[in-house]
Image 1 (cartoon, rainbow, N blue to C red):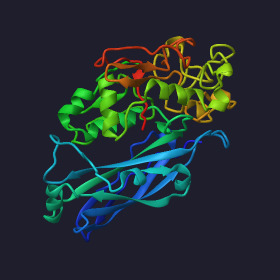
Image 2 (tube, rainbow, N blue to C red):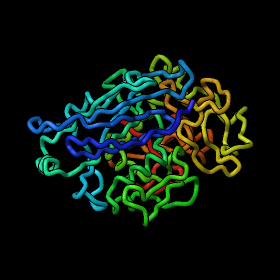
Image 3 (tube, one colour):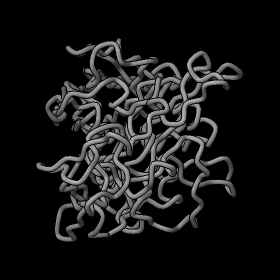
Image 4 (cartoon, rainbow, N blue to C red):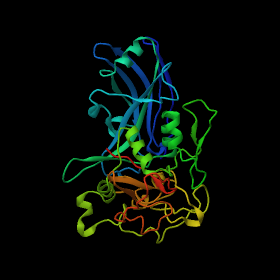
Length: 380
């Protein structure tokens, strides 16, 4: 079941005069929540500071559906009052022993929430350290994205974000960029379900708002998708990684029984009912958002088919064997094999049942085109 929206809070640590603000970057359907953020102290000799936070996560899937390990990717951004402005935007927190600190098993978080810590590292930033001791007050935002570990038979495992990037996530991203770059990355559309608006009179950090925050974000060009991934400390998946995540582990996939769709071989256009009332009118009830039925030419909320609004079988949830939803339909997702070899996989709300097959040829677009059907998912 869907949980309440993430909490937003502010903690003042008087001993070091740090103003701490919490900012959670997550699709609400993932049920990741961060709370109780606090600074534990500044170590001038080690040039570090501890940022503690409470992390909780609860799966929206029925019990037993998840097919692989879920992890939570945690990263941070900072802003120095009196120095940073709309012209600079927010900066990425450099962390000590980053690999061990910022991937947290979802099971470790649990439903109640345990305390975790990031170690902010100032080793190579004398200017920042001097500013902190001069009394400059930093704002720190802790961000979380739910990921799934995908094992490989050959080579290292990789991670893929469980959900497509939502419109709230993208609006939050725009609000942390410098004002000029944010304008360049904003699609500014009023069509196909795009609901991110810009208010030039709003205070910096709140200029961009999403009327439908949980809806998958579309109108994202390849260049913008790559920039978003880099901002989050992640990357775009390769085509083979994307297909691996959709097909499932070798013992399930097997060349002799290769999956056609992430849920199996059932054609989603056959025996599939259509919503006739509510906010989902015109969309299929099972498997995936595709087909552009009755003019329903827009994405649905990320993870929509696993939210339990109606009874669905495990296959009808539409997720891959690794528990990843929306790999077919909703928004087409950017994949990147190289700087010159990229495209869109999975099809969109406007695609046919044929076009949302796992092995369908990726759609190629110019890197700067903002297509109504294009969104993204992240990898590591």
